Length: 315
Length: 235
Image 1 (cartoon, rainbow over the protein chains, first blue to last red):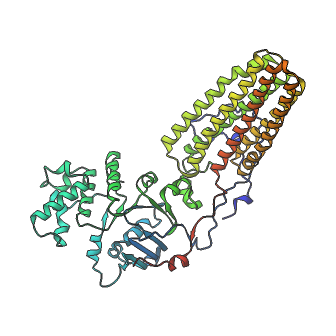
Image 2: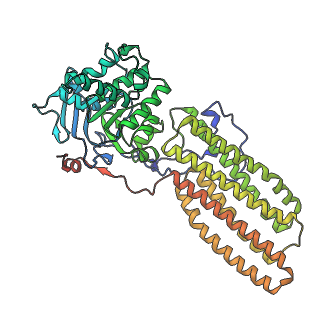
Image 3: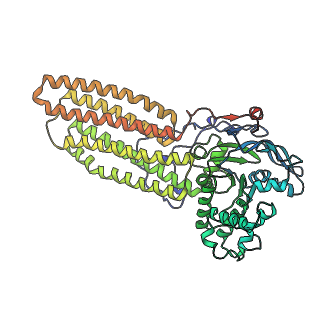
């Protein structure tokens, strides 16, 4: 990529007819202002990529006392490398948003964190992923337990074909977290309350979970996830199938849950990432380009690729 | 700098806002030029024209504010676009204030008081030339989103401030020698102050251009692979 300073730049705005870009603004008479419209050099040079792409992630990849610590993570689907050399820590009690264009590897990386890629034929994961300091690929680690500690909420709400009560009670029963019915009732009630669903369903817990609205189903799925007291909640575009009101409720819930859990959310909505997260990581063609405080990423990103994506100049 | 969105409509909206602010800048530049000329020539007709056109300047500011709000609501801009929209709107506010200062100068003439002495007119003309140069260059910087020119304008404001101080000292000396025309001297002092403020508004516009283009930001924090690999995992 050439340094933009070497290229002549387009003339200033006063020499441009906005009607050529948008039909909504017919060109008005341009006022004679005496301004000299000489082209100027651009002052923000793009970051140069080497032949293999950048090998450095811009921003603060590490955090103090992370819950997850990932180093050199690579994922292959057969011979195709989907993500390359990802290094990032995930902090406790905060939301990390993963953004990037379609196919950039953000969902692939998300699935690494609870070994969901194990379920994909031909998928291989390399590198180190440590949860509370322990390698999640350790042979002695129970992957079922892992997926209880690192819960996941999917794009399409997927309640079990069971009652609302049993949707939430299923995992605690399975993991032997309860001694009796009273414990189970308590967990179901607490989980539904924390998911902001209790008041809406408390009178109909025996009714099927699939009978709820889309937004309610997604909150039921969240309640199901938190019923086993995870340490991390993964969310893969949790609101993309929801209407704006349901989305707002889920985002509000994410704010509350972040007080107790580490949350990693993949989203295609920049605005959602800006609203719900404290840190944002930008992926591009399988690489982690930049990571940092959400406020900074969305006001003054350091990498040109990040800025082009979030401003809609790329993707 | 502001173009290149996948959404051409967004490009168009931003370009329209940018052009509108520059149009306003052209109008204000004219106002300053005409007000200074009216004072130098003691032309009450020209002064009346400046006063009449002041309403147009205010209209520009109001419409630009509306466009800014619409853009933010519709596009939820971030990063460079967000900085640019705010910078353009703040620049419009500065231009509005510069327009107000030029109206004040014109009102001095329109009141048809006693014409100032030649040395005072010369000082006003000199300061007006400096103020107009600053304003013109700040608008050029805004037109091209050029941080280099913007930095020059910011530095040049100090020169204008120094010339203002010198002009005031000369005015005060003349007033002390000729106390019967103290009222004329006071009016001239207000005119000099207005021109100094126009320079300030030009400088603030240049600062807004600098806020769009953060080329003086510290170098980006990089986390090279080997540095990260050395960072221990959590125990």
